Every structure is written in structure tokens, then in C-alpha cells.
Length: 599
Image (tube, rainbow, N blue to C red):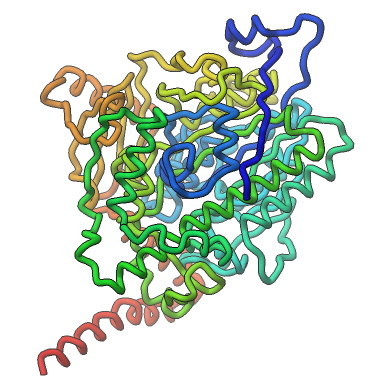
């Protein structure tokens, strides 16, 4: 598919009544009349690495996202949480996940934490979504795709500010068969249309279906004359990684050189694009295998995994192109602001714990990968390449887990095709959208009730002048998820990652020169190191961060929660037999194999 030729419309006259002003924007305002408020489209990719987008250094064909980047502004230092629901909760509310109910992902949350303040695993009544505020301010609102911030009736989109909605409420599902689970941790996949169980097609493809629904909702509300807010929560590239064969075929042979070569090529391209320093060092993670040491058969199989991964991202970009084409045809495109981001870094888990269940429910045969009934997990080696040149991946507090590509494009961007390198955060999106819509922030009260205040900063100033910074150099920004921790202050980052990826110790890095987190500065900068540890402790206490239990492992916790929350309630004592089977059968097979070799 050829890249779309998208014209750039300058931000003309964002009115001076915005919550935060920018001199260059105000100077460009037309005094005769106030321009129409822009439409807003938020595109959320799932588990994409920092350099998966072409405009961020990747080789995957993403022409539509790349064109939005050329027409808009890229953010090279934008941060999210390291897993889906914490990020999505902040994206929707502008409130830190420890204050909005998503202190951890439900599936990895220790039993002792679930239900504690900030750890309800669902949006609390004390937060208001950006959709609610936009709806009250005259916007028509819709959401299609992954929701994952609460399946209770009070938390479904129709009660959280969305006029129309068709959502999958969980962490993920099969992309071809909507009612098929991707792991055995829940009884079913929860789907809702306008707050009620929908009639689902037997077979669909998730990215196509979500864009179909978005276009349907936009057409249905067009006669109102109101501006719109459309939120599209893609499942691409969440496991199981699946893609139409026509897209998979495009990448045949593309990844035969392996993950290390890909990681180096992407680092070079990202530097060429001005997204990272030209001499930025990067680490080889201990979880990355030696490509040359693999058998020829294994290399062929692994290359196909990445071909499917690239195809799924390509297919999602194709659907973004369909949405853009609709907006052009309807005359809405030039007045539409696009926001694109990923909810966290790439999936680095190997899913070995679910191997037996997967054997019974999915195929992993080479010739079926990507298609219906087949399962692909990118794994830690390819995920390290997807995050290039950053360290770690999903679930961890290294830059590869929490630094996401962000693109903002549309009539608000007067500094097009440039890069903003300042520290930005997912909580900054809500105040930015409210400023674009010329609506005030609600503060600490809304409709007579006390609510959590938004903590982000509007990005509107940097849309006109990317050289500006939205945070002061001495302003701390804390982060924690599942015991992995970080604190940002200016260009410095304090970070602790737990095993097996990290060592459980604090480290200090200068992200301006070392985004790959290769040179620990705690000995060189002892005073900032000590001060930032104190800043983190203060932030954690103020936000109710709970300490993880002794011996906590997120992988182990997923297994425990599956037994407690699904298997036991569903099967009772029978689940004990299932547990024995899950644990005992692999061990028995291994023992049998050893005895045969001994003979």
C-alpha cells in the first residue's frame, strides 16, 4: 500500500482561552473568529517496541503512521507503564495508576494487594475519564477495541463517557476467534457493546473489526455537527501474534540475519532520525540468545516468528490507513488530531509456564503461524530487537519496557516532522486533549464529588516549539509496577529491576547520552543518587505504593491467580487434579525421556 499524501494544516488559531498558552500559537491566532475545535483520534497499539514504527527506526512497513509522524511531532522520550491496564488507566484519566485503582495488572497482583487502596484492578469512583469531560463539553465519543480498565457495569465505557462502544474488557483474546482465550486465566473473554453482551461474529480479524466499528460510529454521529473523540484500542501486537497471510508473505526472508543484526540496524536508523544520540551505546541482554548457535531449523522457525510479528504491525497500520481514508472522504481529516502510542514495550515473556495448555488449544507448527488456531510469542530475543536500542522489555522498568513511541499529528502541530526529546509521560495526554478541546481541567471536584487531580502536563507548548521542556530539571517523576521502580529527574533516571532481567539493585543513568542504560553513574554522581532515592521513597509513600511480598514473581503470580480466580471457582476440587496434571505431566515426561536415554 502506498503512503498517503497528507497535507499539513497549521494550527491557525487555538484560542487564548486554553488552560496553558503558547506565545507562537497565540501569535498565529486569527482575531476575526475562533476556529472549530478539532476532532481527536487516539490510536493505542499493544506491546509495540520503541523502534517498531518506521518513523522510529524500524523496517516494518508502517506508511500511515510514518505519514502522521511527518505531518506531526514525534516524542522520543515518552513514558508509559510496563503493562497494559496501568497505562490505559492513566491514558484515560490523567491520574497515576496507583491512585486510579491500577497499581498493578490484575493477573500479576498478589492476593494480599488486591482490593487495597490503589490496587482495586479497576477504575475507582474517584477518577473521571477524558471521555466524560469531552462528552460533557460537546464532543461525540466512541471507543472500539481493548478496554481493560474494569468490567463492572459502572466501569464499562457507556458509564465512563462514551456514547458508543464495542470493547474487549480483558488483557487480550484471540485475534481471529473473538471468544477464544489466549491463556487459561479466566473463564471467558468479556466483550461488551454499549454496556451489554454483544453478538459476535464467529470469525473476524481484530484490527479490521475495531476500525470497522470506529467508522460505523463516526458515520452514525456525523449529522450531529459535533466534533468527535474516537479511541481505538488495538490488540496488535499482543499475544497470540497473528496476521493475515498476505501480510506475512511480505516479510519472507526479512529476518534471516537474526535479532542481533536487527537490533544494530534499528539503533543506527533511530540515531539517523535524531531519536537517540548517534553514539548511543546499548547492552546485549542476558535473555538474548546467540543466533549463530541455533540450529538451521531453529533459525528458520525464529525468523518466521518475527515475520508474523512484523505482519501484524503492518496489518494494523493498514487499518489506520482505512480510518484516515474515511476521514478524508468525509472532509474531517484536516481538522483531526491524531495521537498514537503503545501501551508498553514488547512482550519478552516466553510463556513456557503455559506450554501444556497451549499444546491442547493452539498449533505452533511453522506452516500455520499467524493464521487462525496458531500461536506466536515474540520471546525475549526478538523483543530486545523491537525495543532497540533500549534495555529490557514489557513488565520491567528499563527504557525498553516503559519508553513508547508517541506521535501527535494534526492541526495543533505547527512544528511538523520534528522530534521532541524532553521527558514526557502518559498522564500528559489528558490535559493536552482538554486544552485542544478548549475545556478546563476539573481540579479536585467534579459534579459535587471529590476526585483525584490530574498530574500530567499539557504538551500543547511543544506542539508549537519542540525545543521547550514541559518539566523542570529538578522535578521528580516516580514510577513503580510489580516491584520494578524508577524515578526521573531532568535527564537522570534512577531505576531498579528485579530478577531475572535485573539484579534488584538501584542504578543511575543519564538518558540524554545513554538511553540504553549502559553506564551506571551512582559512583560518579553520589549526591544525585542519594537525593533521587529519597525522592522515590517520598513519591512511593505519597502514592500508596505497596511493597511486594517476599519471593514475589510475576510469572508465578499469574499461575497462582489462575488457580485461585478461575480454576478453583470453576472446577472446585477437580482443579486440584488439573493442577497435578499441569505440574506432574511435564515432569513425568522428562523423567521418562531421561530413562530412555540412560538405556
